[in-house]
Image (cartoon, rainbow, N blue to C red; front, side):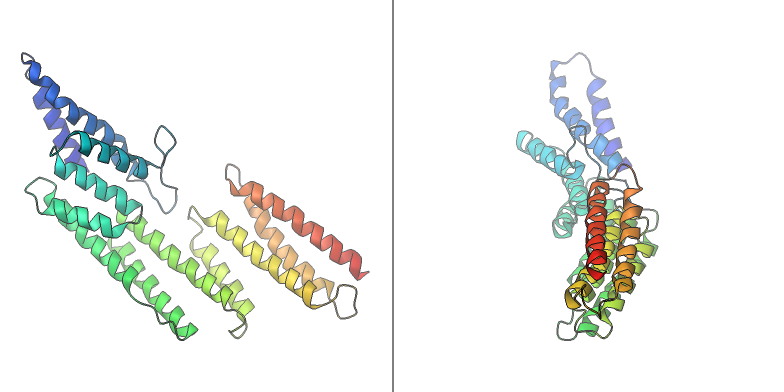
Length: 298
C-alpha cells in the first residue's frame, strides 16, 4: 500500500517541480488516480470480519465504488499507470471475495517490472491458498462425511489466520472460516430429522457459533437466527400436541420461548444496529404466541 502512494506522490512531485511548462496538465490524470486510491487504501485495511465493508463519502461500498472509478480512469487514460490500477483492482476484488479475478490481476502486475511486482506476486500466492481451500470438494453422500469436510476447511482457514495474523488476510481468512461455521449449523438444522438428536445438535451448533464469533459483524444476525430456531421448536411442539389437550406440556413451550426471548432481547439491548427493530418484532410475536398457548391450555 505504501509503495503505491509513494509512487503516485513521486509522480505528482515530478510534475510540480517544473512550473515553466504548460505541459503540466499531463500530470492531472495521476492526481485523479491519487484521489481515487488515497481514501480506498486507508479503508481497505479495515477489519472486514468485525466491521462491514466501509462506505465512501457517497454512502456506497468503497470496494465497489473504487472498482467503478478505476475502470472509468482506465477508459479515459489508456495505458497510464497500468500496474497501479490493476493492483488496486485486485485489492478491491479480494475484499469482495472475488478471489479468481483478484489473483488474475495480481499475476498481471507481477509480470511487470514495476515496483508493485513483488508485492503482487506475494498476494497472488496467498490468494491461491484461499482458492485451494474454497475449491476443495465436499462429500455429498454421507452427512457426517460432509460435516467432516467442513471441519477440515475450518482447520485450513484457521492455519491461514495464524499465518497472516495482523494483516488484512487474517481478516479475510476469518470471514471465510466464519462462513464455513455458519454453513455447518445450517446443514445440521436442515438435516436434523435425519440425525440422532438433531435438535440438540442444532442448538449446540448455534451455541458454538455465537460463542466463537462473538466479535463478528454478523453476531446479531446469528443471535436472531438462534432465537428463531427456539421459536420454531415452540411452534412445532404446539403443532404436534393440542394445547387444549391433556398431553400438552406448557412448560416445554415456555422453555423454548424463554430461550428465544433471551436471544432476541440481547439484540434489542444493542443500540445502533438494524437488527434491533427485527428482534423487537419477534419478541412481540413470540409473546403473543405464548399468551395464546397459555389461554388454550387452561
